[in-house]
Image (cartoon, rainbow, N blue to C red; front, side, top):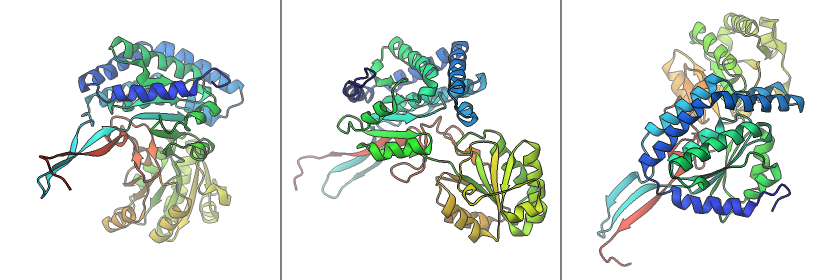
Amino acid sequence: MSSSGLEIGVVARRAREASLLSAIIPTERKNAVLLGLADSVEAAIPIILMMNNKDVADAAKSGHDERTLARLRLGKEAIAQTTARLRALAALPDPVGVVTLERPLPNGLMARRERIPLGAIMMIYEGWPLITLEAFAICFKSGNACVLSGGNEAAETNGTLGKFIEAVLKGCGMPTEVCQVLHRASREESLALTLEEALIDLVIARGEVELVRAVRAHSRVPVIAHDRGVCHVFVDASANLEMATRICATGKISAPAACNATECVLVHRDIAPSFVPAMVGAYVGAGVRVLGDAEVVSLAPAAHAAAPEDFGREFLSLTVAMRIVDGMDEAVAHIDRYGSGHTEAIITADERSAAWFTGRVRSSCVLVNASTRFNDGFQLGLGAEIGISTQRLHAYGPMGLEELTAQRWIVRGSGQTR
């Protein structure tokens, strides 16, 4: 038992046992839970906002910065978006049992490959309390049990959302152990659960760099990381400059604390004299601080001189880096050096440039003439996401229902031996 009374072994064992039950819940019953949860959350918006306001006030008193507060703070629109995601997940096909390959073998065996749940999933995360709802929904619909350990800065909100999940599960006749919300677990307690390799099948880490590193260093269970989002936009020489200005501006302004916000703009030298002053002007007019290289500052004095460490930073605020490059090769080299494998975009009218960029850049999502903000599970048709994986094994990019399943073989024979 931990110092706060949390029995780590009991939590892990419950998750393992619940995963055996969640794997066989019929699709219609899973969908009923998701739809019921969406309804109950909508009906309780005033309560959720009240608890969230308490979390925000406590976090501010504790000295958390505005970036943390922005990720913590909820509004009616954010809650409405989350309930829409719950309903979207309910409308999607159930991945469990889907046959992805079936073929007869020369020896008479019939082999098929099908999707099964991963099992017991633990998620350790910070900020964004609505992750609690989405993580549960994706795990549950894909047949998994989950243990959700959010940051203590969101304890009141996460605890309240956990109670809604428990009530809906109970009301639908489902085992409540399929979702355990540890809303007041310490970092040490959460990390202790990552040692339960015989009971927990996967750990997902989503938060600041320090959290992700701690989980990776400590865990005996395989870890998928939702890591930093150092997202770039390269404005090519052939770009429509009005389009580029709009994409770069909204990519930063619409949700500056989001992991898919634009953090660095790379500008082709041929268009820099016309594009940079206009782009910096648009940013400054919207309250964005621009940190540019020497050439950017010479073209737009409203920009501030960037330090070397400003390239490769995830600002998560109304700050953006900007650099002028000689062309595609230098842009890709910059992304290779400073990117985090999250999201990159090119603004171009040249199809060959678009194809070359998407072929060379290996981030989890590469966009052509569109905002980095579209690297999102809901926007990409996954219903929701449990995180955006920035590693290539076993998932890369937004993780939805299929990414929380594995594929196994079922082989039928008629007495064959080997």
